[in-house]
Length: 115
Length: 113
Image (cartoon, rainbow over all chains, first blue to last red; front, side, top):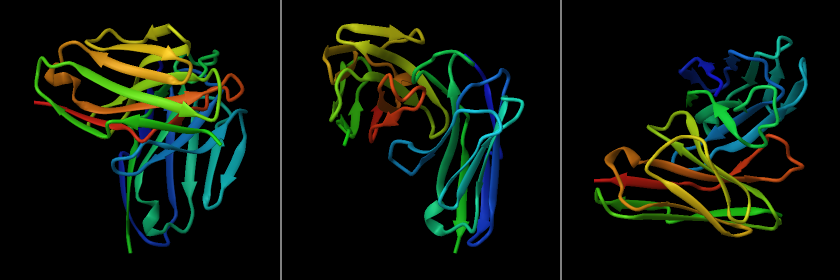
């Protein structure tokens, strides 16, 4: 399977600050997904990206599919305490192919927001 | 709307005991179903996936097995648990129309002691 490198591993920020995290792969992807996981729960899909250069927003979250197709970025603007959790990037297990839900995940970014 | 449920939510089992985790999906037919494992709250690893009743594919060799006795039911099993089987197990689903996007259940915490 493909290796995904997600950074940073953790972030400690003040409420109201903006957050940026990224993910890189060793191969070209045709899909990038971003999930958020809260303690003791399953990951929840935030944003799905399907096209190189695509920029998609979901409220205060914005994600971009890198032009090289080997990276993706997630930004959170004006963070609030409920943004706390682990954010994961994910892509097809068989990069560029029809993996249909067989995903490889980054190691996650742990976000802590201080009020 | 579609929903997915897993149970039990938490489980503490001794080494060598059997395991059965169950997952059901409602509100859709002929879903693709997946079992992922998450160790130490970090990255998820695909264990099994199924595209239909009785069709199971394994992604990694391990002490676990999966079965799909009904269209919307997916079961994760083991005959004899190992300490290394401890982790957070997540069932997920999607359909042929959702591409690579999958939707997760609430997860099941397994601690092998």
